[in-house]
Amino acid sequence: MSGVQIQVFGLKKSAATRAAERFFKERGVKIHFVDLTQRPIARGELTRFVQKFGLNALLDLEGKAYERSNLAYLRTTEEGVISKVVETPELLRLPLVRGGKVLTVGEDLAGWKTMLEQA
Image 1 (cartoon, rainbow, N blue to C red):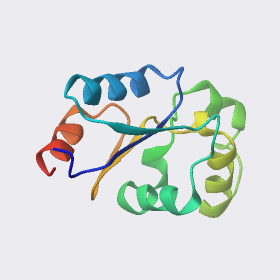
Image 2: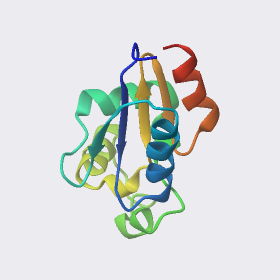
Image 3: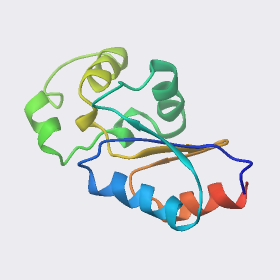
């Protein structure tokens, strides 16, 4: 079980992030939590998620941060949006979770179980 390192990128105030923490802790899995208010997600790390899911799948299009950001109306490059997301993690559908080669976005119990099965 200790074979896979689980990284959870999220915000303490995010219910979905807390759900991910709880999911892994209940199964005795140690996670590495990255609080995006303390430390922005590394560009390379974010790029991994973008390559797998596409940038729009990572954005919380229903969230207040997205509404306030005016991203829906701005004409910008993917690179520009990535820069904005690094500065404003609330734009993301959290948590972003990585366990080995498995990546998940948002509350994804099936994906989290897959991570544990690969351990």
